[in-house]
Image (cartoon, rainbow, N blue to C red; front, side):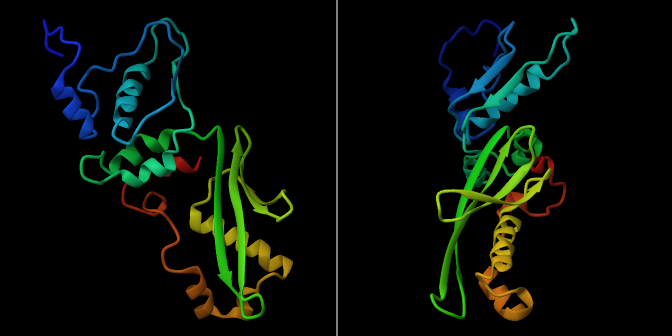
Length: 213
């Protein structure tokens, strides 16, 4: 802030924050702190965290470790959906900063339905993407018995479309649904749909793929 400005509340900084452009300089690191835990943050407040990160990522002169920032259950996949909307950070915020956040404990569940040509004509299935660092990302299929079965393990996090296809392939192997060559390309496309990924998972110009690690 400006020299001599001792106001505790600054309306102009509130406006800047609502526009998703950071705190206007009010976010400052605390000396001697080795870990910051972010418990609650909206999409509009995430640039404040980026502002903190930019200040603490500079290597220390005494050889000490760089402080770390922990995002505690912030549901970043949901917050990413607001990026690019009016009064929210732009979509470039995903590539510039959010993609750098590494999932340490990650659990993302999804439920799907798929039509089949024989009774019961509709199959409901569900699964999850799971990771416990430093382990790899696992695609798990709900067996319907209160347990999950590992389908695929990979060092790279799958996009939602890839994840759904992995679950579908597992059902094909079990004989629950027809194999690709049996159902045909057209019916396979109609059952899968055109849109299989969220915007930040898509291949875009200058997009960062760091979120996959």
